Length: 313
Ligand code: NDP
Ligand code: OXD
Image 1 (spheres, helix red, strand yellow):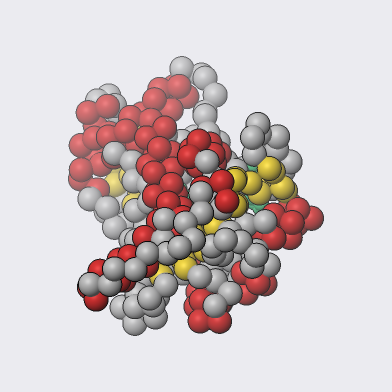
Image 2: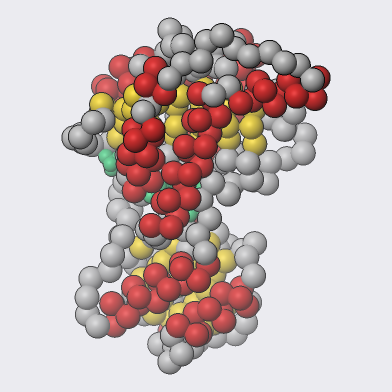
């Protein structure tokens, strides 16, 4: 029985060493070497080459090495096996740090002072709203969205959330589905996207959505997307910024990653770019979570954090 590591862009030998230390009894194999396909019971993947997981007749589970699983469903030859993803308190905390940081940057108009400093400009804004005056709307009230919502609320922001199914969360205005979307956007000064990329959510951050954001707030509207690049239509974001209907965008994820050097997003004065690192977990923590999952399965216990292929997340 073996664990197959299938990843691109990461140091696979480091991962092999991590898993080998945690699962000393289990052979750890990689796509780049000959291995017995019938012996593979588990796969740990991050952006494996599509089609490379076929012909594994004894596969019991596929583990995403991240929280997102969209790259798995993008493989139309993905074998049928339960898929589990990373849910890690450390990753969740890091994402909330990112969201809180960038909401505060907008609340305290820090981008403006950063533009002023090279010109030695001593100008303050006479309108310094309190956090309670800014309405934050979080799209995606899952592991990440809920934690960020609670932390923003603790700072004082007026927070609402939008999800697929109805939710009731103390202290939070909640909206759901297409029916709830317009009302949610109409009360949003800072839109935070923490949605998974699915067939339903692809391209959701488009001109229509951006046009529906509040235009009556003390500041904004602003966009923060740390979900997936496929959620956003970058041309529409740029058009809204240039038209003045969107006042700033902080993007951690992009239609194409790494962000191509000729993308106008790099140099737009109202755009903040981060290199898809809003929430990076310690690799040791991820390997340890997956090793625990494998031990659970070997002990006949159910897999945790299983995704639903029909929903795509
Ligand atoms: P969860 O699965 O826990 O939560 C997803 C949320 O999105 C749920 O609230 C779900 O609604 C909602 N949702 C899904 N589809 C729709 C839809 N069509 N309409 C409305 N709401 C919808 O995911 P996580 O919170 O753990 O992670 C979210 C995403 O964050 C990941 O999929 C990944 O893409 C991204 N991510 C980015 C990182 C980065 O560094 N930039 C790091 C880690 C993750 P419901 O509650 O009703 O099911
Ligand atoms: C993830 C990510 O999905 O880092 O974990 O994007």
